Length: 251
Image (cartoon, rainbow, N blue to C red):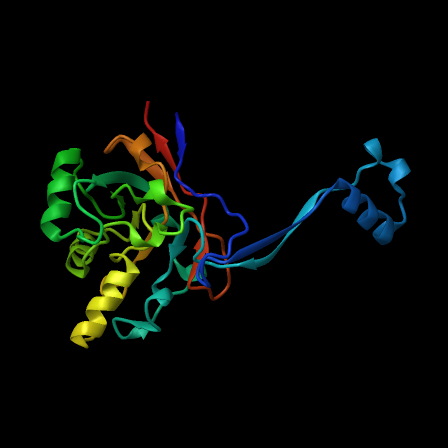
């Protein structure tokens, strides 16, 4: 069955504190030196005089590149209980049937409402069931890596997030920087109105669910008829983790 990669590259970047990743590379010559220092075997006793190649991830944001958010990312408590960290979430959330909700007709900053989600679902021909993985396609992945990437995307309303959760969905993703509408738009409205509940409204919807953010290549998927595997790295006590998200398309 075809496997479609829905993940962005993990690479050195310093776009923002949330995105920052620093990877240091040690080539085969450096590896040969490490071998000699560790166990005394010189490069002359290794094939082509080369040792191992290794990399050191000196700084890795758990929310850089394509990643899965845990409820603890949103708040310390969810529905009156301590919020779950990424290592505490059930694995059966992260391998299930998927559906693409195509909302590319919407402008940047015009968030997906309940009506939008229902209309896109009906168009997909998919019947939603508990633990389905819902992927929102707004087309913002075309800007990935560009300075204004985080300013693109529709985002999803808190009401639509609640509706998906009420259908039994526990993992929902988007091909944009974040699940809510672009950060600068949320911030401007929250500051202008001086009201809580505007900034990060869908994140802080008091729901124990996971988001996948910064998805790629949703345009390569059919609307339905595929499975999503999105297992996050098992990082103790973390609010999220990078994931190699793939879709397995039925023949």
